[in-house]
Length: 270
Ligand code: KMH
Ligand code: ZN
View 1 (cartoon, rainbow, N blue to C red):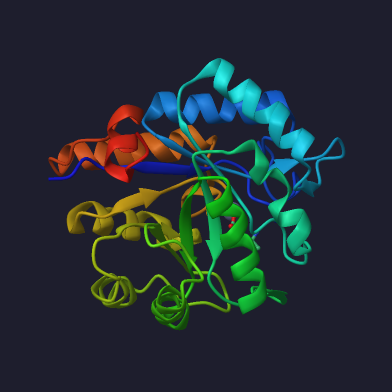
View 2 (spheres, rainbow, N blue to C red; view 1 turned 90 degrees about the horizontal axis):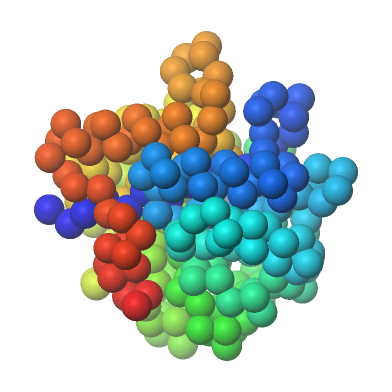
């Protein structure tokens, strides 16, 4: 079976320290969380960063500092978020892409995001896709429901997005598709040919969707951005703890876990 690529979203943009006491926010905390997740078995770090007050930011200088500190501690594939926080203007969302991480996200449509609106108009998607292409970055398309996946076909035909991408189904955001297993199976059946995929289950969906992705030959994203619980009523102590469980599950299911070199090969990053 194809080795399993584990991606870890170590902080996100929506959580505060009131929501989760162990939230990594400073450059050193983010770098430590990233290297602990990689030591546990992750090969991609999905990266948001925080400013001096701990608020989400897309500032290039902060991304640069955090990137340097992560690279000092470990080898990994860095995937910058261009989603930012709900409401971040598109120019800010693209600000760090000139640093040329290996990967960056493109969210494929506007949606309700809890009680807020996560805006991804055609213009925003095209602007982000252009910056990603110009910087030679591999895009990860964030798909929150079926309509977004069907939009991928339309954008491909029009040449609005690069021909090669990695797909990430983010399931369980209130306003998007839930992490019902039938949704995952159906979405996977509709991926454009030749593209790799992963699933990120939000909250209670993280564990069952991880198990199914391992069995289906897809890849897995687990981390605090998506889910702060290890199990019902028990807060996870770290990103690494969530990654370690996926590594154990993969071993039990005879699915090898990709190291960073293998993950780069599988994604065509070498
Ligand atoms: N913070 C969410 C509104 C991404 O990283 O590209 C969007 C998000 C997606 O986290
Ligand atoms: Zn994110």
